[in-house]
Length: 92
Image 1 (cartoon, rainbow, N blue to C red):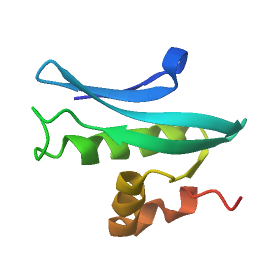
Image 2 (cartoon, one colour; image 1 turned 180 degrees about the horizontal axis):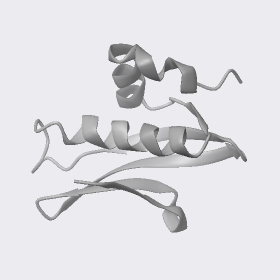
Image 3 (spheres, rainbow, N blue to C red; image 1 turned 60 degrees about the horizontal axis):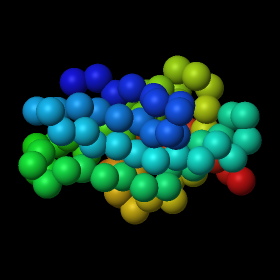
């Protein structure tokens, strides 16, 4: 399972068992993404797909020197459980 950034619709996507989980984002500044909404299809919910999706999106941000605003509650909860990602939270 690999998370991909789909710029055409401002989403990070993860395909699992022919279902697509995604995080919608808004580009706030050239180096800041606001992660606004996460959706995991019920067919794959409870299998760690949401966590893999968030981790993949954060990995992308880290590799591309981007900070995030975790507006989505799911993303915020993930970061609270994994404080190693706190360095990538935007100060704005």
